[in-house]
Image 1 (cartoon, rainbow, N blue to C red):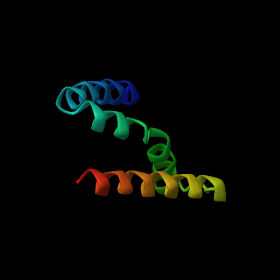
Image 2: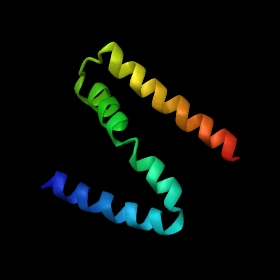
Image 3: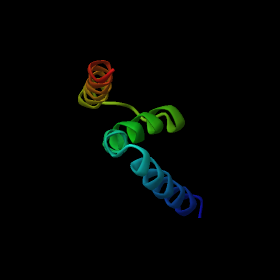
Amino acid sequence: MVSGVLEALGSALYVTGAHASPAMAAVLSSQFAAIAVLSAFILFGERLARVQFAGITLVGVGVTALAIVRA
């Protein structure tokens, strides 16, 4: 039940964000996998493989670089 409510809330927030800034909403939604892995690591104590850690790092560096270039 909680998952369904959060899914509906996330969809509503995405639509609201896409209305304000479609590009930013697209970039943030593309980070879903990295956020899911980090959440599992923090909340459930899951182990990260080196490839997963490298992927999360690469996503973070790429988004930061784009934010710097855009500003």
